[in-house]
Image (cartoon, rainbow, N blue to C red; front, side, top):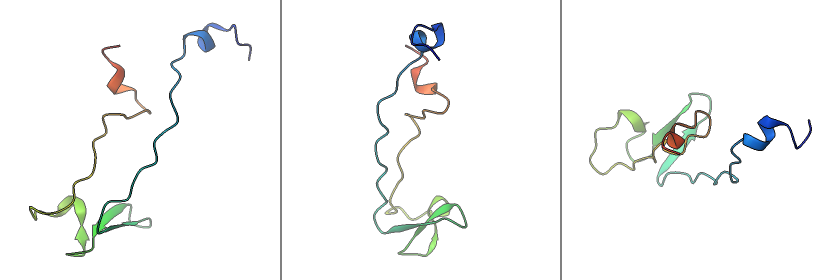
Length: 71
């Protein structure tokens, strides 16, 4: 593909993705596909404990580019 192609000229170039940090006191279960909070040994998303660690947002979701709607 040539650098002068319209898709190359108009494409948004993303910076290198930041490395995701592991949640404190949690472990990711690859085979199950979710985080486990080690204090209660329950899936983090189902925990209703007020002191549970909270994961970050999907604001910078590169796959859909939804965070760029206003640009």
